[in-house]
Image 1 (cartoon, rainbow, N blue to C red):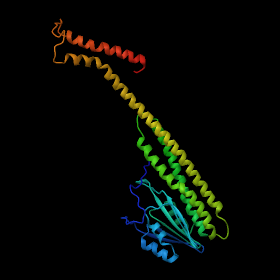
Image 2 (cartoon, rainbow, N blue to C red):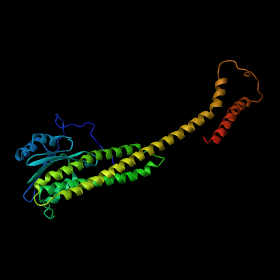
Image 3 (cartoon, rainbow, N blue to C red):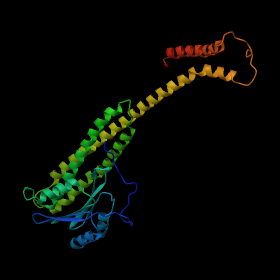
Length: 328
């Protein structure tokens, strides 16, 4: 079962932070009359150099360097800036948080991100491979391709969640084990993914509208509509998964409660059947005089047998009565 991960503390990016910087990798992918610059694990001087070259706003530079920033779109005269959230899958920590920042102009695209987004890396390799026929026609088509491959990866993640739910279903209805922790981990991944996907639909709509000014040949509305359809499918799957998780949670709680009640019922019956012996032992174990204590009972084991019978007979009667009531 995959287990998700989310940092215990998140920073806005505009405070002094102790961040473990990873090696920076800058790639330039040429296209038909445009440039695509991808920056992995950016340093401040790298982003500021790009800002000086293309005229990016200083606030957007800070957003790119932030460890966590809410999805947004800022539009300017000659370009627009957008932040998208996508969850990369880490082999050790499960579902994490991935932020992709894009500066989109008429003849350039700058993508900036912390950590690897595998679908984006695959797209870069495809565009760089001379054996493939895929070429960068325009920034509009390129932005669509990037968003499309990342959303397709979300579809793949949603299918993984469905597969995990199917595996979990067999364990939920197994009385011998409890899956409360597994349910909690999967619910956390589902909620985390929902928080990332929900604002994505409006952002893709805004990108589709804003990018039209850079496209002279044909509209990209149909292409982005297809991406939005995929986002709707992901959201629908996540909603169904969340409802299923609520059912599993209630079922696991009821089964665990029923198991606990059965154990308590057995212990209660054992305690009730021991009451006659406890009462006899309590009375005759006190250091006070009781009638009949000095009576002589013939036989070496007569007193012992009398005490045993006095304990067993009431317990047997109680057991028969409990069984008739259906308690045993």
